Length: 484
Image (cartoon, rainbow, N blue to C red; front, side, top):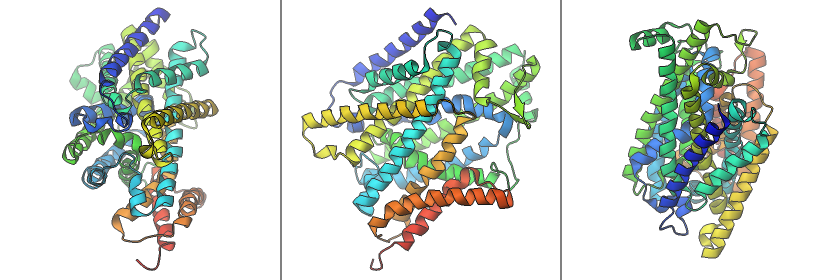
């Protein structure tokens, strides 16, 4: 792509975000950055959350991963629908009843300060790594697709992206993100539609032939009933429920936007609408994945394989868009990557800032001048941590979406265990032991999975979050107080 056109596209896109930022930054108060003044339209929030829920990881990993895992990710999508129902009808009413800004304050109300800070700390660690890995993949795509040819070092690209996000979110935070994410979700969906239509036209398919090509392809297997497989239906379905509850319902970055809606009833509508939007979008990604391999086979494009496993599947979608889909496809892909990067990372940075300010700095008790100063310093610290993690993991290989979900199983499992215990049992616990319980559970889960693979060739896969949460619950029952 022409360098001038590249920078023009990015400049125009960023100017649109800055315009939205300026419009939404009017009438801001002390808590606007964190709660958006609780005036966001529920339908807009639901549509905008597509970008946060998908990210550049899904944009390239889900379609590319079809070559090794068929359409088994659809089993996970089915589980997510049940998870969203739990979020809408159980968690959301509780958050609104307690008027929470940081959702981890629930743990303080239910158990106490130690449990509260433990849960928030696990979120901070998990979200920092998860967001950084999503940013890592986004930067790798931008480097491979555009900036390496211009000899721009990748660490400069990382800094520029973080600075741009800071510029349009610094003033009003989540209030701005609700609107910018809606714009970015639109562009993200558009790039998938454009890619599908490009393949259709290139292969001279009618829409009926397009559907037939997807349905008849060997990769179009929806269900895996092999109990020893990591992609077994029951493992994927159950983990879809639990990971959705953990990574959406117990995730500050996702729920913070929902909590900017004015009441619990509209917030429920938002969650239900979002569950429909995200399921449709992810299913489209799977369909695109099959079509990509149809296109690859039709054009004789070589694939790098090792022991029957396709290597570097995250590189396939960028490869096709840049070298086979024409300039329109390349521009659409650039916009899609930029949109998904900003939409997922801006919410994560805001959520990390919010959680640390409320859960560890007691910002709601500070004076006006101190609130602004604390928020700015914490925001700077969050950006520095994100930059450092991306630099450390820069040379990582493989499908990053698998890495993110596997890591989430270990880091969100204790949070899920804490909430399930609080919601569905009356026990109180000896709080001084909670950090040990929450650290021991993921460590033991890892050991159990390694032992199971060696002894029985049984991989927990994404189901490690279930085992992790269950062990956390058992540990909490062990340290419960005798007198209730």
